[in-house]
Amino acid sequence: MCSLTHSQLLQAIYRYSVQSADKTAIIAKGVSVSYALLWKNILGAAACLQSLGLEKGDCILLSALKDVEFVYLYFAAHLLGLVNVIVDPTSNEERKKYIIETVRPKRVFGLKGGIGYSEVSLVGKPTDIGLLSAQDIADIMFTTGTTGKPKGVLLSHANISGSANNINRYIGNTADDVEVLGLPICHSFGLGRLRCNMLLGATFILLGSFANLKLLFNTMEQYHVTGIGMVPAVWEYIKKLSGNVFGKFASQMSYIEIGSAAMSVENKRLLMEMFPNTRICMHYGLTEASRSLFMEFHEYADDLVTIGKPVTKEVDVKIFSDEGLELPIGESGELCIKGNMVMKSYLVDGDTVDSFWGEYFRTGDYAYKSENENFYLVSRKKEMINVGGKKVSPIEIEDAIIALGGVSDCICVAMKDPRGLVGEVPKVYVLREGTTKSLEEIDTLLGNKIENYKMPVKFEWIDKIPMTSSGKKQRLALCHN
Image 1: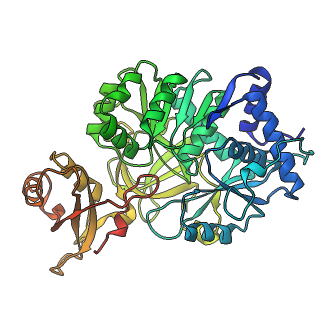
Image 2 (image 1 turned 90 degrees about the vertical axis):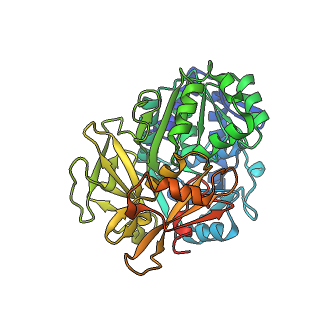
Image 3 (image 1 turned 135 degrees about the horizontal axis):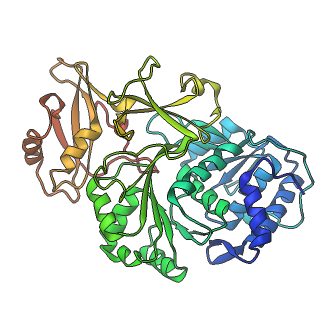
């Protein structure tokens, strides 16, 4: 058999295939796969990959479909020392073309013109290829980003297992849990949930999406689901379409993980009321540094605006100046992260330049650290509004507007000062749907809540707030409009 010393995840799956052979590992599209069958089919998929002439270090492109075959191929590639390039099956053709031309994979699976998942043979076992290293590249994930071309993030076997260990320690999920995933598995959050569950020997259900709430609720009831991951936009969707129905599962839910975008304090409190005995954990992280900080809603009931703190000794977070100097407590600067889950580098060398201060990855987010060692996000560095030399956070303005009530959502961006006095000034787009206040009312009420230099000089209605596929507001797409 191939060596497993390089991959803690493969070691875990193999161990459970022996110790818990009949236990359900994966459920997808009505198909249940035991740990024994999962391991058998990983070996079969690996044999198939070898038959295609693939060798250690070769890249294969996997379309992240919610099929069991995706799971088999994903771990089979790790077994052989191949590199998975994960793509969103719903991506536009331009993005897919860019990724393919950048990576030049030896084989493509699940996309038009490539090998279909149904064509993958699951018979046989691979031949031994010798020892691999935990520092070898396992996956290339392309950032969704808010501007510019996507960057290829190189993640080693040590990175992805380190991240899974960090997450599991904080959330406290166990082998007895059953988790349902409606999020895409082409992003760090969703794919990370797969790895977390396989590392523990839990049961993981791949749901097509959250769009069909009836299917979601039926699945939660049928399989007695105890855990779920979601982004704030999903919670808004569930709340809007089902009201308090989600809360009927409170007694069975052990944990909820939330991430990828900011969430209002109001929504956090609503979830806390609905799930009083459930660990509701929110993470801060990036594809380059998955789940770097955590906070749990009930534990942080008096401080729900924080993004938390590092929760394992393997992770360290500091605030640096633009010159790379560590800043003192209370002073805002760039949030920088060192840890076992931080990427090795970007695929394109030019993208890695200026991405680190020493061992600390530069996130591009402005934040500060408090006396109690919690961190507080200010804004994306590129999204900060420079009002006559004073840095203004668009998030602060958005939060102040939402706190007025009667505003469903808004997005604040920089625009050129029409008076030509201070360079940039804030501008706010207010989501028309669901907002009951007029723009004039918002303008008047906001004037009593924030400093004068932070006041938006212009308010406009917008029918849809631009978002990335992971739910982050794309402020730079609207800048200077």
